[in-house]
Amino acid sequence: MSTVHASVTHPVDDKELWRAYRSAYGEEPFVRIVHESDGIHREPEPKILAGSNFCDLGFASDPHGNRVVALAALDNLMKGAAGNAVQCFNIRHGVPETTGLEFLGLHPI
Figure 1 (cartoon, helix red, strand yellow):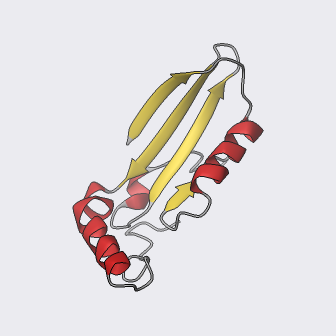
Figure 2 (cartoon, helix red, strand yellow; figure 1 turned 90 degrees about the vertical axis):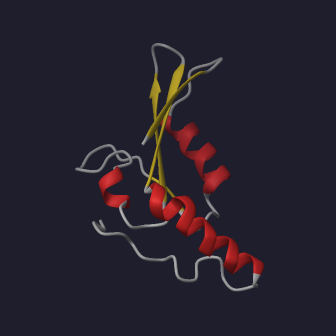
């Protein structure tokens, strides 16, 4: 789990952040944007990612302090070295990048 605080030059709202995240990660097969207004999993949750090759990203904006908080969670065993090795092998050998890596994890949503 990683949390990053960033100052912004002007206030940003959730719509603007959604657009930015979709623009940057919308085509990535193993990146999911997780940001809900209610429910049990409103932001990235490391438990859900155990055993998966996914990286979940979330965000929050601070309307009073011109600050954005970015959140990320992943399973460093699967998304780390093991998943990375399989993903690179797939790309190198011309098979779909997601082959063998589509397991939803030990605690799927």
